[in-house]
Length: 285
Ligand code: SF4
Ligand code: SF4
Image (tube, rainbow, N blue to C red):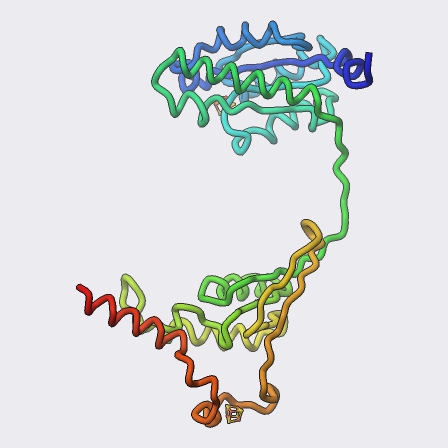
């Protein structure tokens, strides 16, 4: 017997399926799924209940863990977004590592999206069986605390990027705001009015642009691009390429006098390209 098999021999799974009133049970044959799962390997307990997230429902799980020495739990109910934490906490209170729990979503992914009861039941069986197979392979985990870098990188300094940067900066965190164009502002800087109120676009945008430029905890990288991102959550390393300025940015006031002599000005600007495209589209109409 190899290591994996001997490990699976010790696995004792409790399966609990929820009716959610009639939310699940009107489309899924709950008793059928319960009986199907009860015959799967390592399943020691298979029970159904009207409202599994209620206190009596959670008590059912806790008592079953203690009485049957369960070391894995699966709940087939709603989305994990709704109640994964509820059931993990219930497992923990009964002395089971909360990561030895798995949830099968048979409401949003099954009863709510099907009319045919036979097919919905078949799908629920498949979801439940998959969760049972998966939980058997899970290992207990411990929650650890690690230091993370709270600085935020925002790629793209259009109105959304600027607003996000300002709000993060207001919360006291540092922001690196990267924009590939020479100026921040994005598409909104090209518009005259905004839909649907027809407010002046520049009147909304420019104070935010100025504000983003002056915040101490927002570091702007205009005319720059992200080259690489490595690392992981809370510990990313990002390489940013700043394109050549050809002027002393400390001294340049942006007056634009040099632009008329600049050979690069022979190329159309982004605004010119957009305007030309608009004219071509209108001419075709
Ligand atoms: S656990 Fe989810 S599916 Fe069950 S009763 Fe509560 S909300 Fe409904
Ligand atoms: S002429 Fe004006 S825009 Fe050009 S580099 Fe000098 S200050 Fe900047």
